[in-house]
Length: 258
Image 1 (spheres, rainbow, N blue to C red):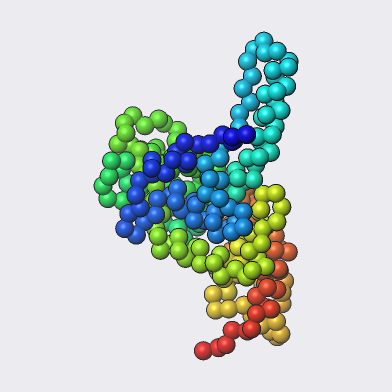
Image 2: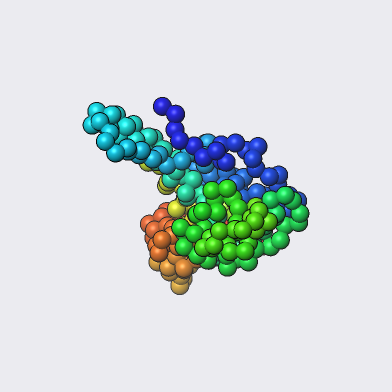
C-alpha cells in the first residue's frame, strides 16, 4: 500500500540551494533525523503525511468499512515516520528558541539571507509547525495570522551551518549503547541526546568525579535538568535518562586535567 506523502518534501528539486554558511531548513531536518535516529531514520520519513479519512454522505456501509480499514492501516504504518520527523523538527525549534541555532530568511526568487530574530520561534507549535510545510515564513506576519498579499512576503528559511554542526556534534559522539533506538517509533535516542547535551551545558568543564567530596549525583541531575529544553510543558528527558547518560560517561576513562 502506498503511503500519503507531502509533494514538497518528496521532490527535493523544489528545494532552493544551500547558501554560503547556511543550510536550507528542510535539509537541516534530514540531518537531524539521521543523527537522532541512526538505526531507523529514512529521508522519506520527512515526506510521509498523515492519512485522511474521506467519507461521503450516503456511502454504502461496505465501502465505508473498506475505506476505514485502509485508513487504520495507513495510520499505523505512517505513525513511526511522522513521529521521528516531529522529533527532528522540535529539536531544531527548541534550539532556535534557546538562541543556539540562528536562522535567516531569503526571498523566494533569490537575494541575500537576512537574519531572523530568535523571537519568531517563541510561539506555540500550531504556528511554527506550519512553517515546515514548505520551509517558508511570511516575514510580513511570521505567526501566520494574515495571508501574504504577494509572493515577496514569503521567504525561505535557512539555519546557520556552524550552529547546526555544533548541535549535531554531541549526537555524533554518543556511545554505541546510546545510539540504539527502541520501540515502534524509535524515540529512545532523542531523550538521551537531550540529556547528554544538558550535561554538557551544565558542566562545560567536565562532569564532577564520582568521588567528589561535595557534589552528589542528585545535584548533577538537578542542575542538568535546568538546562533541558521543554516540550509541551515537560522536560525532554527524564531524571532516569539523565542518570543513564551520566553513568555512560562515568564508565569511560576520566578526563585528564590540563
